[in-house]
Amino acid sequence: MSASPLTPLDYIAEGYWQDFLAGRPIAGGIAYETQLHNCALDESLESLQRIDTLLSQVRRDMIKGGIWNEATLLVDEHYRNFMVFLGFYAGRVLAQQWENRPRWYGQFELRKRYPELSLITDDFYQHMAVGYGDNNAATDALPLFFPLEPIGLRLFGNIDRPFKAVQGGQAASGLYQAVSARLPDLSDQANSLKISSGQATEVATNNTTQSIHSTIDSSTTISTSQSAKHYEPSEDVPVNNEFDDVNVVSANIERPSAATTVSEPLVSNAPHQPDPQVNPELTKIESPITKPTSTVKIPPTPELFTQLLIELDEIEVPQASGASEYQQACKVLDQFERHIGKQDKPRGQVVFSDNHIAAKNKALLALQAAAEAGNTAAMLRLAMYELLGEGLTADNEEAKKSGVEWVKQAASKNDSRAQRLLSKLYYQGVGVSQDIDSGKYWLEQAADNGHTEAANLVRQWEQAQALITTQKQEQHSIKRYQLLFGAVIIVAVLILIIV
Image (cartoon, rainbow, N blue to C red):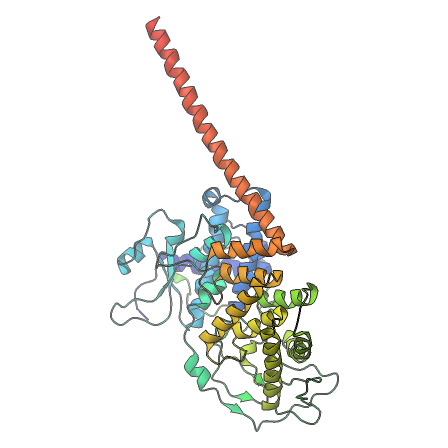
């Protein structure tokens, strides 16, 4: 890493984080500080999902409260500090994934170190960036991440405010997506993963809770170089290939600190101490930092697909064919999902026995048969596994394309669940290029077909648009009155001069 001196932002970023951990007020104050502590910021990738959820809630609250105005809120120091703190935190998480210390640059340092960037001086979202990853030998520069851009898009993005990234293209929709896109390539480690099938067998009894891990977004690959314990099924763990009950036993895989982040215990109840005067030059950037205790269980499956599974059960859509095959497949796949739901490990690290894999693949084939027969529920369930990289398509990119095509096909059949899911894919850029217009179109289609959540979102969007229109009209009226008043004054002056 470059030996260049620390920048002022390096000290500020570290000071923000240390104050937050110690429970001290951050200089200038930040909005939503209590909610941030409730997000359990443990420097994990999953914590960024919790932050994105908080940002979405903040956006909804601002719209409902009639204060959803980007220019006004950026003047408020508390909101600015809130976004800057989240930017510092996201940069910290990203740099940790690269096993490096984050290096922060303000616009002055960016113009000097990265002269090729086209920076706008008064653009709040471009005034700070973090360097991470490996040095470029030719330029002695680190790859850059502008974390305020996805935060701004999450809070204020809409059709008329697309948030173009300073490095080109559309800004990511949220911190989790933005950071995931910049993770180191661990494919080589994944290929070298060695599974020892000769390890001890775990016997599953009727009341035993089995171990399977949780998931992350399908766009992120989590892997490990640690050896795995591969459990073969015993007589107590039958696998019935005729779609009877399948008891799934998973492998227990250690997670390395470089590839994935594990929440570490923290003594968070220490008495409050007054903030001493500290010389910034003595700030210990490299010192180990105690991490907050995570009190929130990491969701085992991305919210995108968790909601889909709920809707497949709760929202009934008449099916003309494939119902039997769909039910048979779900009988097996639901058992896998129930076991996954009990765990807090990434599902991409679970290692199943050959018998279990065969049973799951057979269920997926039945699901595919139902989908090809026109069953939209089967299309959506199959699409979920393809987008997660757990379907029948081996190539990851082809799997995503296949998953999106199944969703589109179901949406074209007026399945409101598919239309809502497709809107999310476009809004979030999952499996497709992010397209706000297409996301809005399919959201409205889902609302028209009776999807309650979609209808509520469309109504909120219309209210926000009406509010913006009203504000513009009021501003226009004020300008007209000002011009009229000015004209009256001029006429009065002329009359006085003439008289």
